[in-house]
Amino acid sequence: MRDEYVIVLDFLPHGRPSDRRPEPLAQVIGEKYFNLLEVVIKDGVKVKPGDRLYIGEGKREEVKYIKGRISYDELTGFAKTELENVLEKLVDTNEKRFVEFFNRAGPITTRMHSLELLPGIGKKHLWDIIKQRKKKPFESFEDIKARIEMLPDPKKIVIKRILMELKGEDKRRIFVAR
Image (cartoon, rainbow, N blue to C red; front, side):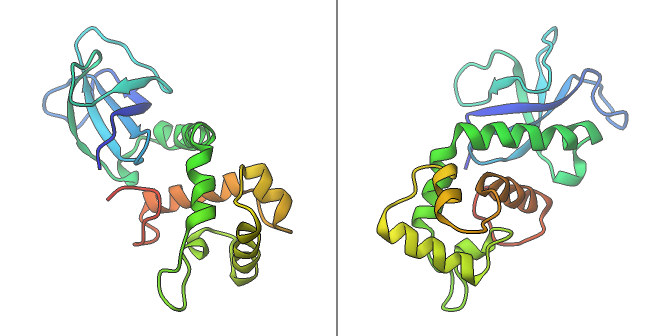
């Protein structure tokens, strides 16, 4: 699963100190599949955290090439702090996609439901969500919050889950591509 667009988390104009060949490097996260990547930036191009870059098949304006995937642990300290802000914006922008997850998520096994993979959702919330979505599908995070008693903020739950997946804290993936 490839991302067409990425968001810059950190820009290293001279690359990493350990690189043999210094070249401008950006640590980025995919807009749709949340792939963590390092991309080499074209000479003379300056990017900053929060910039949206095209990395698809066509002509790329800023990106020379994709260096490769990286793990959460390989992110710079700055990129890690920026990550949560970027995820918040991405989840806001794609709210419909995540609300659909609440509407469509199904069981993984006879004992485990995919909604239970979300932090803060146990059996009680699970059954409340299932009951409510049968009556009428959820339309927004606000709608979920209003209809499910005592549920932590659904947007924050989704962001927390994405971070867990990026950090490798759970082998199951809901939102992050492998």
